[in-house]
Length: 531
Image (cartoon, rainbow, N blue to C red; front, side, top):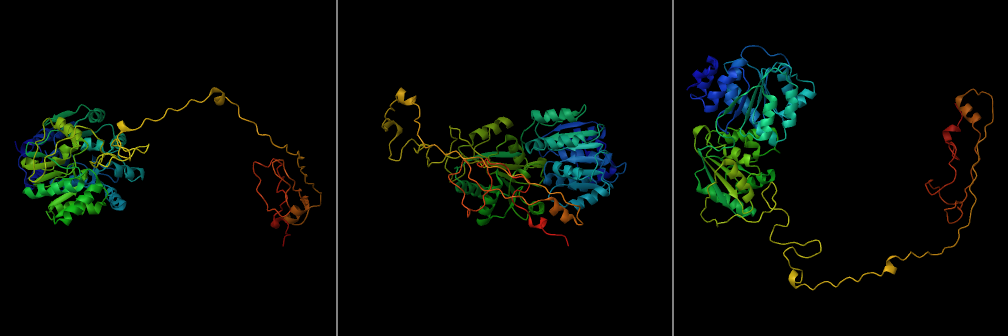
């Protein structure tokens, strides 16, 4: 079967031929005719099988008729990462160059002004990440009432990154009558539930079983020491023993990406770094330089594990065993794409048994063990120890032993070198006598305090006067001078107040009467006459 048998227009077929493609992949053969019929699609296929072209090609033909209005896109494609959204936009440029379609790319790290200008011109194809799309919607810069075609790509990655609530909100803003295309590399129960909620009588297309690895990828598992510098040394041995053309090196943590990048750079390797903490311009420049083969190795986090299509990638190295088994499928899926062969090596420590077992259960086959020359043979540990995202064991898992709460060492020895079995038993605690336990507290006699009389408040008196000529005169006329309240000692004070004692704030210990009005203090501005 060729692309001419799928019902595509002459303009799209011409663009596909210019790109060098002749035979469609299995998912393209099944999805493209269904999309052209206007039906909803639920597609599940392993990474690297051409899912992107399976919805971009028919979308170009569907949107060829009609015209978009300002701020009202006709179609919407949701992607989990900026890199994947940028790649889909590039595919529309390649396949839609003979069609006059306007597209806009809404991703983070880019100025809002340029994106708003593109929306004002009218958009046929809107490619966006969920967060930036909602930002524009809340700012009142976009309306989703005219979207007739929705594509949710890499839905399982949306779930991993926590975008599902945003996706559900976006879908609630769209018209009920629309065509929806739902694609995912894996199909966990949560994704199946979302598909049932978003799709209407979809055509299910499954090319291979979910979470399966491509047969064109040769896999290998290398057991290494858990120490970081020994792990980096083992990676350099593997790299030097393989004919690497270009390779991705995946780490679990962004911090480890920078550390490994600096180490390989120091040892003379042509390497770059890519992770989520980098600004968008740096990420784009690094990825483009790697695609142009200006560097051989790219240390990256899982930001590059989904959908990034790099021509003829020869190797993938997992410096850390991925925490989630599905991430392993997507990592090694960067190589062996479009029928080409590739190799994937994973470095595992003795504490990674739980994660390796989870991966092997997911893919349905064991990962072959590989022994590197000069590397000692290490087996998995039988004891399970906690591990964070970086692949290291938790606190207290090292060889130092440490100390417990009572000052004893965790390895079973006290500071004197005695084991717990040879310690002297503690003497038994003598019980307290009943009469001592229930004895009443003794009363301490104290001298009786003298009783003092409570202070008497002096009420202010008012003297009637005639109406003055100035308001200030009215204040002075109607307000008689208040007699000062004598300072007396209260019951909670140890002695009388001295005349030279500084003024104190009234607090809860002073139980005298509250002052009336301004008390004994008259502001100076009230005593001045008008000018």
